Amino acid sequence: MSTLRVAVLGPGGVGGLVGALLARQGAAVTCLAGHGTAAHIEAHGLRLVSDRYGEVTAPAHGAERLAAPVDALLVTPKATRLEESLERVPADVLGDALVVPLLNGIDHMALLRQRYPDARVVAGAIRVVASRTAPGEIRHEGQLAAVQLCEGAGPLADALADAGLDVAVRPDEAGLLWDKLAFLAPVALLTTTLDAPLGAVREQLGDDLRALVEETAAVARAEGADADAAATLAFMETVPAGMTSSLQRDTAAGHETELEAIGGAVLRAAERHGVAVPVTARVVEHLRTRD
Image (cartoon, rainbow, N blue to C red):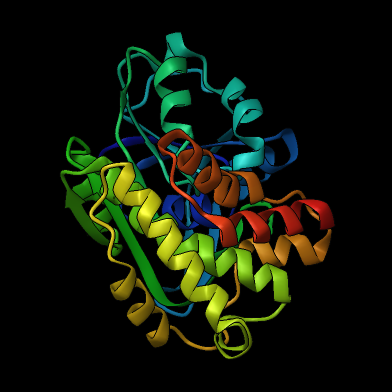
């Protein structure tokens, strides 16, 4: 059983899933959110309905701001809400706690280190299909629930593994962040362009898909990651044809999207290193104009 004190900033699909699993194992979980969500979680805890974990109801605290020290902070809001969400976590209260972002993109690492200079900010990434269905209620689809953490996560990595997540610890921050983006960016950008799942993208936009994977891999290598475009493409062939992306779903619903955190991040890194990414630039610009 875990005895960690964990704050979850943004208990949506990802944060709610991880928070519920940690709380089930005994961690003291505090979810930081707006008034209504925080009050609901304080009263009712977190409820998870999962193809993999079944139905889980776990006690958790809800609060609008962090008011007491914790061992670890999981940063899980949408990238579009990150800066305003961080107002819920005063640096003097957080102190030297471990901070692990489970966010799309790469730009958040510098922001978190600047905002919390005394904290230990360790890169993390998660692959999961999970969504918030109501305040404090999460739906997890399928069996995928894989977390990668850089070295330095210590007891949190152990607690996540004990909670039932597939956890891998690795030494290379750039590799960890770009491994996810090298897959996510092409899939998200093209499922959104076509407003269709990955199977349709493979059939109708195969050339663009290959180009985006190869361009993103080239940027990743310039950033210091050991990116393999052929391996990413081979993995994509194993992914179920019905896979969609949160970028596609948010765009279709008229919500704020993470286009800049995903596609924009690739373009900004490409510009830093002078890497040509013409197809990625065309697709991102099309989606910017459409938005």
